[in-house]
Image (cartoon, rainbow, N blue to C red):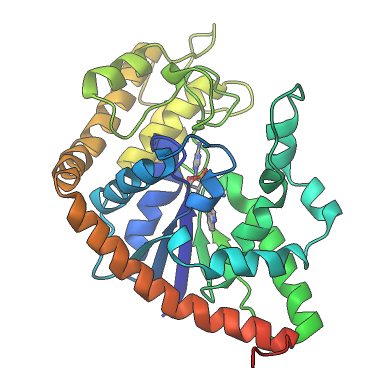
Length: 329
Ligand code: TYM
């Protein structure tokens, strides 16, 4: 059985891009694989610094993960900071990746491009080393992610290859698994940018817990273009193509074929909104139920931490033994 691992940050409310690009595949993957899914609170510390906020968002995110269909009996859902080997292996990864490689990461370049006086934590720069640790600790074969994470999986492979060359075969090489539809959901207001927790305008983001009326309104206001032709063309018609992509991802259709079914932008927006509302309704009601019992969520995360720790500690030991640190006497 292949080993699957993927993670999500508790750094803001979960949105449609997270769901279509990643979470949905995590749920389907738990049947065919030994699945591990982390709520990566250490990563979230690069962007969330108010005391208590990350912890509160971690519980909510756990409820979302179970509400979308991760089954605690089959998938291991855990919190990154509950498994100390993540931070420990991250240091070994930092010593295996170069400054130059980290400097070329597009996410770091994008997030720091604005310049200015904003505080840029060093953790934002070394972030890919921690992510490599997340993945390599679990002897991962497949990493189901959205398109924006491809570069992070590539650098993880490079780090693993270098470590294995230096110290012997310790790490398994993972590969990214990206869905056919929904791998890159774009912002409804700025369809040339991906839908992202850090976007400025809320109106461009569909949150998983948005009320149906809010979802409908956001789709109605989605930016399209000044033509009047429904055609799938990501470069020339990013807004319309995004709506077709979302509709395709929700209904299992093909965006190009779906374009032929619409003559007007308005009807396409309504269809996309209806498909999203129908898809999210059962998730929203399960989420509400799960949030009623936080003790149960904490219990499930405790079980997940135990299972994750068993795997991660064995891998970490393999890595330190291969390096040959002097064992504590
Ligand atoms: P994060 O928390 O930003 O996003 C979680 C998942 O959602 C996907 N995603 C999208 N997919 C399609 N369209 C979008 N607009 C969109 N926005 C986000 C992401 O690709 C991701 O799969 N660095 C990671 C977290 C991480 C991780 C890991 C992932 C830490 N360690 C180990 C995999 C394996 C991140 O910030 O994801």
